[in-house]
Length: 81
Length: 152
Picture 1 (cartoon, each protein chain N blue to C red):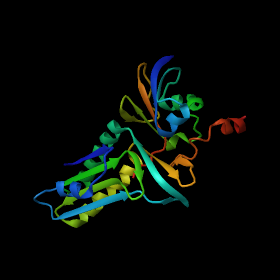
Picture 2: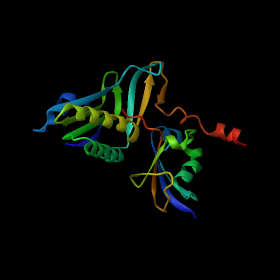
Picture 3: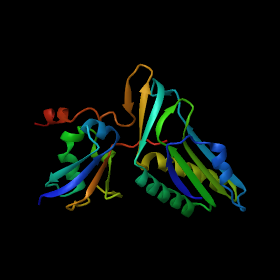
Picture 4: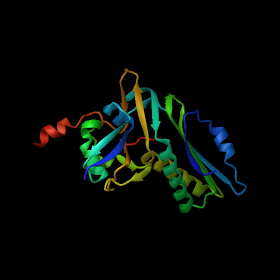
């Protein structure tokens, strides 16, 4: 079922997408589906397992089902320290 | 004072260490992460850190809570920089106080190791040759067209 979500891009993903945030109409059932569907946007060839996702400001699993109105934060591989 | 703070301001280790006072503390262990001038064979001129602070601080609090569960420490504190940093600047600081040194060393090591792999923080290196790149993200800029091209 189609749903409307807000996607936020960070660091390399933001640079690649050319934007920090966008509204996306999607058929994706899970965060993983959305990440794959948006490869044209963030443009990354990075394996999903190296990246992280947060939904509505909570760290989430890629298998988390998406709901209409969710804000999905896509994090490229982290490098703190 | 047990928390993780994401900050755009310079880290002053002496102040942070002095603030970590507990009457029962016989040991203090600190870790300072500094910007170095080389990474993977390339000469680095400066670094830029980006963080998503709300979640970095939340996940950081979990890491410190885990350390407090695993070792009998009294307090722990961590500060991680954002923004543009020069060679020698402090990028991250971790301090732990405990009655004895063993648990302070162990907890400090645990906190910095987890901070590096779990917090939503990204590091962009600016090289002396004018190039720049996001660390751990060499495929981020690659584009997935190559995959698609070979997939069919």
